[in-house]
Length: 175
Image 1: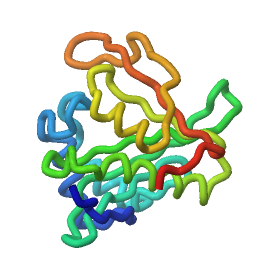
Image 2: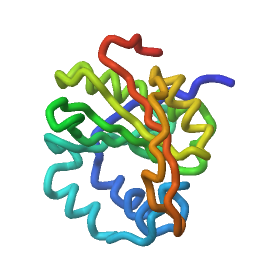
Image 3: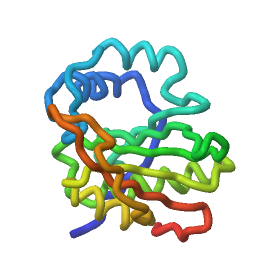
């Protein structure tokens, strides 16, 4: 399978309907569906900081040849042990772009971007225990499994386990 060329770019106003879809279409976001959310939040957030805040942000995963938004990657600042800053990243792709080798590359590109532009030593990512595709994607993106977060998420009426992955600044980039 040929690699689909992608790039990460800042959010544009034209991307806001996609964000609204993820908030209002059940299960479009996959296992992360947590019920209906405020569909007016994306325009408010875009007006506030264009999704490029100092402690959290989003970038669009764009398929270059089509100039199509395949989804987005996100990052949020966290503290480990109350003192060690790191990024926690996530990804949401539209269904038609899943399973095509885009996700792992977008996450690797985001890590390279964050390591190039911020001084953090660590980037973390979590996924659902049943999401084997994302587990493989994270490993391919240079992450290592750290462990199971038991009963760490309430979803679909029950507490569920998750897996925690990390990539350190000194780990080699897979790109």
